[in-house]
Image 1: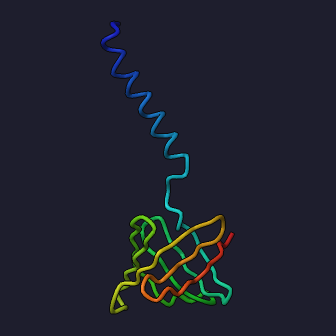
Image 2 (image 1 turned 90 degrees about the horizontal axis):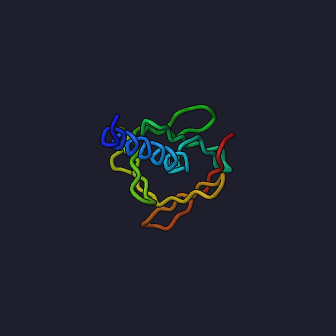
Image 3 (image 1 turned 135 degrees about the vertical axis):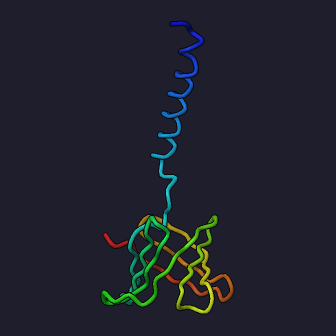
Length: 111
């Protein structure tokens, strides 16, 4: 077997290992999971880009979401307009800030 035939496979193997390492370093969606505020309001972000908002095991709003940088946009068929918030995740705390009013909501990750 010549070096010419081995080289493309070696490069491909190195790329697969490198990309796997990058993916394992936490480049995923920081919003994923179920979050609860101090009043019992829950918001859950799922990996299929759907979300639910509820309280006391009742779903009040459900729809889809998109993330762009540190902004999340929630779209629900029963709502007149999309909900947009800036977000930050620090440890087990999710902070959502209304970009217009500055209102801040804080949630804790449910384990």
